[in-house]
Image (cartoon, rainbow, N blue to C red; front, side):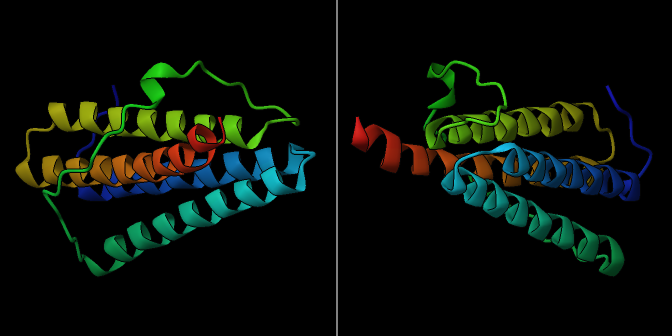
Length: 151
């Protein structure tokens, strides 16, 4: 597991993860044949760009807004099969892919936070995990509203 020496290293890592998410969603958009799915992946990428910008501001300004808010987990991802990226992803599969990606990011930050000895570092990692759980919830709500209601 990755070890961090300070908050700057954590922020650099998180910024890199957000950029990787941007690149991932843009790649999926480029590969998508459906204009609707392409549009959705561009929206996902834009959201990740905003997260990257927020982390960059925190790094530059030293401002850190931490929250102990609890985010509801609809647990939809626990009942869905994995989806592989492809040029023909349906909207449903795009949401599944996004939910699972956000869940993996949440687990990663939570695991790293569990190893942190410095309380400030631990709190930052828990805050990043919380943000990822918010992203997952957003996709779960969309899945519930669109996919479950249509079926």
